[in-house]
Amino acid sequence: MLKLTLIIASLSIASVQAATPRVDARQNRQDVRIEHGVANGSLSQRETHALDRQQDRIERAESRVEADGIVTRGERVYLHRRLDASSRTIFRARHNRW
Figure 1 (cartoon, rainbow, N blue to C red):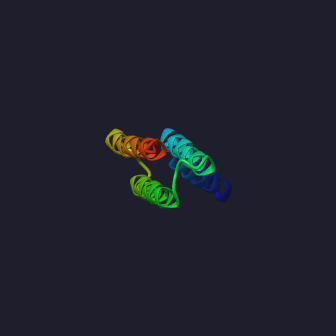
Figure 2 (cartoon, rainbow, N blue to C red):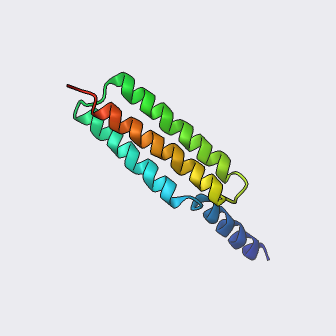
Figure 3 (spheres, rainbow, N blue to C red):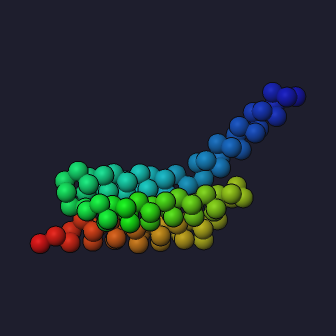
């Protein structure tokens, strides 16, 4: 019985962690874009800090959305819109040099 309970608990934890795989993938890609901007000098330290803070806020929002174990379509749309805005900010910050 204990073994069955552990299996069920691990499955429910796994489903909560994988509730937003596309959001996670987009966040990872945006982190890579920020790292590339730092590496090639197109992002200043100030811009990098602001973008990192923005990514942290999105991660906190994702944690709040996943807290109840169910991510609704509306919540997913909300997260993707925040990621869209973040993506635009990253692009503008990386391409604002003359």
